[in-house]
Image 1 (tube, helix red, strand yellow):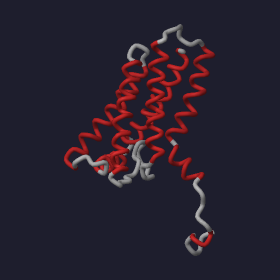
Image 2 (cartoon, one colour):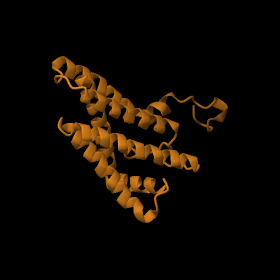
Image 3 (cartoon, rainbow, N blue to C red):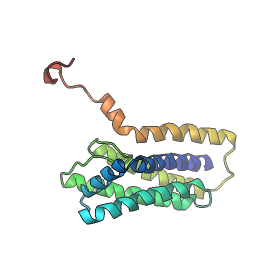
Image 4 (cartoon, rainbow, N blue to C red):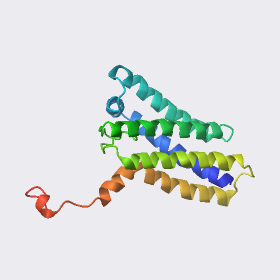
Length: 183
């Protein structure tokens, strides 16, 4: 069960690290994130502080997950943050708002049900990791480490690139609906 905990910790650490780096990589990227926060119903005067708090919380998750002694706190914080983010997405969707998903920085895909499902799945993974860690057992050996990384890394890539994958596999519009001059 410790290999499951490790896989979940690695998955969440990679996802949240990508989110932090994506938002802080450029000033324009962070400004876009602040603007997106405002579109979720946060008053304009609070959008900056809320955006900074979100990024700081994501960074705290990464740091807490990095150490075995603080991993349970990191898993709980991840689940809680994902719950808050999911509630914000659901609230925006209920108001008819579809702001860009700036979860990983510069994305421009509008939020939707897939973002809710992604966050719920990640929160469930965090709780699974917490349960797996609570059952105890010896730390995973080299094979367990490889299995954990072999599961976590591709899943993290899938989570981070979800919007790109959806766009890639979205049906193309019929030829008659395409703009003239394009094939």
